[in-house]
Amino acid sequence: MPLLNTIATPYAEALLQVADARKETDTVAQQAKEILAIWSASPELRAAMASPVLEPEAKKAALGGLFGEQITPSLQNLLKLLADRQRIAVLDSVLVRFLELYRELRNIALATVTSATPLSDQQQQELTAKVKDLAGTDAVEIDLQVDPALIGGFIVSVGSQVIDASLSGQVRRLGLALAKVG
Image (tube, rainbow, N blue to C red):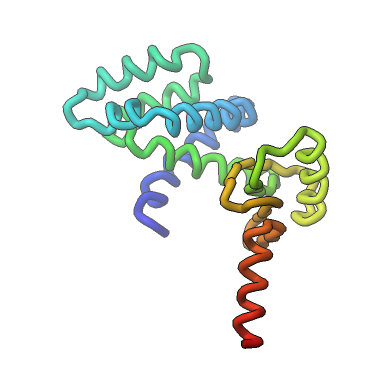
């Protein structure tokens, strides 16, 4: 287990237990995704929270001002605990690990879909239905990403399964086939 997971897992497991005991697991999972989006989009926030110059009390005040009453007490307590223990810089790892544990608990498959262009609502619905069949579950969470380098089409990965229906993938496979012939 990587070192970061060794640090993140106990916090993530504790958050899951507390949220489950308070019957707010689904809410905490949704809020964790929102916090991760903010964390990812703000290098300034990450830098400030990782700074050894800022005291834990200042970090807790900043996080309280930023998230305040918008998040459950379970998440508020996690943020305070991480700040007190000088671990707030690994917040993203803790929340990612929490979401992994949450998906395991709820039997939710995570599918990453990378497309060359943004997908329409109808395309997303059709793809979700296909991914449910592929994953063998009715509960699927789809992480949509756009990568113009694919030229066209998409790549779906669910667990260890990868389906490459992109034009760049087809060109790569054609190149490999031609290299074998020549």
